[in-house]
Structures are given as C-alpha cells and as structure tokens.
Amino acid sequence: SAVISQKPSRDICQRGTSLTIQCQVDSQVTMMFWYRQQPGQSLTLIATANQGSEATYESGFVIDKFPISRPNLTFSTLTVSNMSPEDSSIYLCSVRGASRGSNYGYTFGSGTRLTVV
Amino acid sequence: GENVEQHPSTLSVQEGDSAVIKCTYSDSASNYFPWYKQELGKGPQLIIDIRSNVGEKKDQRIAVTLNKTAKHFSLHITETQPEDSAVYFCAASGRAGSYQLTFGKGTKLSVIP
Image 1 (cartoon, each protein chain N blue to C red):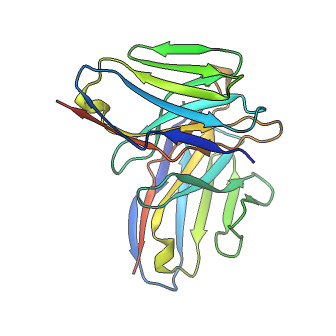
Image 2: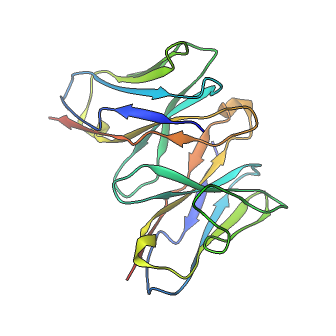
C-alpha cells in the first residue's frame, strides 16, 4: 500500500492565522482525500483533491476556509484559514490504492494535530 | 447519502476472549467495507476489508462478515491481546461514481490483561 508523509505532525497556532498541511505520497495516486477528526470523534470528509482541477468539497466545508492544492499525482496541501479554536482537530490525508493488488484500499497519513489558541 | 451506524461505542474484554463490533449501512449500492484501527496519536490503519461479492474474509485472528441483504457487516477479533486495545472504525464506500468513505462513530476496545 502507499506510504504517506504528512507534515506538520502537530502545531499550536494563534487565532486568525492560517496553517498549511502537506501530504506527500510515495506513488502516483488519482484520488486524495482530506478528513477532519475532532477529539474523540469519527472522521469527516472535508474534500476530495483532484489533480488538475478544483477540489470537491463536502457540505459544511468551503474553499475559502479550506483551500486545497493538488499540483501533481503525489502531493497535496490543505490550508486551514483564519483559524478559530473550533478548528482545533486532527487533519488527515488519505489516498485510494491505485492497483487491484492493493484491493484499491484507502491509506491514511499519521495526521496533523492542530490546536488553535 | 450513506449513513453508517456502529455498535458498541465501547467494549471491554478479557485477554484471550473474542470481540465483535457491528456496523449497519444505509446505501444498498455500497460495495466496499473496510475496518480501521486507530491507536492514540496515530492515523487510522487498515486492518481488513471486504467487497460486496464476498460474504466473509479472514486474516489470522481477524475476520469480517458481510450480510448484503440486511446491510450489515461485523468485525470479529479472536484470542484478543492487550495490543488490540484501540479505537476501531468501520466504513462503507462504493456507490457508483463516488469513492468516498463514510465512517461509523468508532468503538473503543479495551483488552484487560
């Protein structure tokens, strides 16, 4: 399965600032996803990052707040903009396996633990 | 859209006993059902998955069963060990044109030595 490197692993940020999270994959993948996991909760999909086109956002998430870049098939970034304490969460990137051998399974990065003060 | 319900939310078992976690899904078009284990401070790790053309899949101490008619699937862990303690999430995906995973709310499993 794909190996994902996600940076930073954690950060403490001031309200009103922005943080960009990076996701690097060791192989080319078509589908990359960004999730949010609030403390003690399940995973909620923020958006699907499409290479060469705009990201597709889920209900409740907007591009102005969570701009996403996907410049190539191995890399994506998620920015959390104009942060407030309510944005404190774990942010995770995920990729869908590109081969039948992987059963097209989904792999997750280790996450970015964000605290907004 | 898809809705996934997961039970129980917490589960405590004695070391060596079996643990069973159950999930139901709402979208009959879903055809891929993975299970993830998440340890504290880490991202979810895929432990087993099943597709809708299969009723059961086993990997050593872990098995997953799927009942398409009833739209539910279950994770079975036998001979539990303390290192099995973690939060487990089920998910569903596969509606035509969508590759998004919808997750259950998670089960915190504690294996008591």
